[in-house]
Length: 303
Image (tube, rainbow, N blue to C red; front, side, top):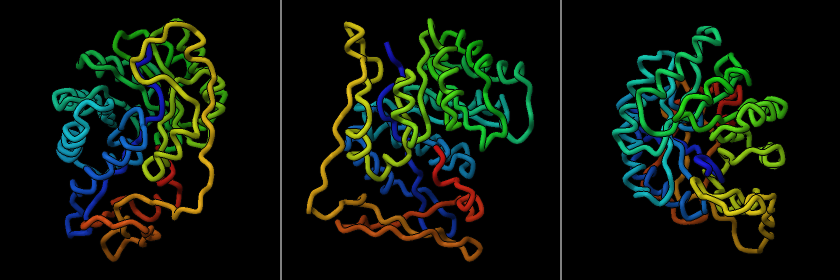
């Protein structure tokens, strides 16, 4: 039985172009509907694409609750709750569970260098504080620390730790995670969109794909047909490698998301390129809180 599988979308957090750069709930609801209509297997709020690092704890929980209520059980909703602080990660995980999250995604502590034993204690404390599944999240380019396969193997022994997302882009690392998860009820997800096919071949159960925010209906059919989360298959052949055909090009106009993604507010931030839409734009606009320096370093492409 797989807890995390298929194409999961790390949902971007839309912000208004007002003075406080408040979260745009209306745009969020539209994006939820678009993602589900595109065939995604799940939605993940407040990962790197969701800019968790610039949102307050209350913003994260309130917006995640909105997403959970809008989804209404159609797909699982995973909430990012990791932090530099074990205490904050535990508190956020409890609040996410109370809000109705299907699982929590927990990035390892960052900014300060921590030992393997401290990382294991961090995940143990989070897992013990909630009853829902816990997903480890490895993104060494952002945290400065790569979760070693040995740490993943030991943390995977905790009952409700059910998966690990690897955004390192290193296929040897992901393969080592797959090996570490053998014999355990733990899924391995790839977090690098360009590595999805390679990860599937190595035994990953799914992908967390940032590009699916924009082109869900292209990414989903163009990726391996993973089973849906928590779906029990009757035979090994049911989960064998079955490839979907990439959609053919057509003469129809390209359909971008209904929402118009606008440049960030504020004179100190360099505007992002505007993506316009050929369909009717939503009545509100969105922006990003992440600085132009971070964007230039590739933050926009991280999950």
